[in-house]
Image (cartoon, rainbow, N blue to C red; front, top):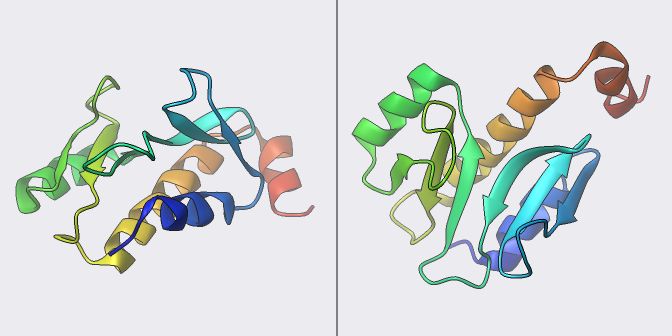
Length: 119
């Protein structure tokens, strides 16, 4: 089962990702090009992470998995909160992190996307 350090490593492994604490030390925000792609109270129990998601997929995931709920204190249409308690496969949680990052990068202006791609 993934732990706080695993989530941090997965988020920071994304190109250009940085860790920030704009809402206080208890809530870790992961950003790319100043845009948030993940938010997690890493010291919280139970462990949760909020991630951006395509709206239709967000609804589908929520209806299929009890551990995935509408984003806590975030726009519910585009964000899910994922309970990291072992009920979802670790690979799925890691894929959701990557998908969130990819969605944010896709929304960046061309030059910012090119810098992340190394070009």
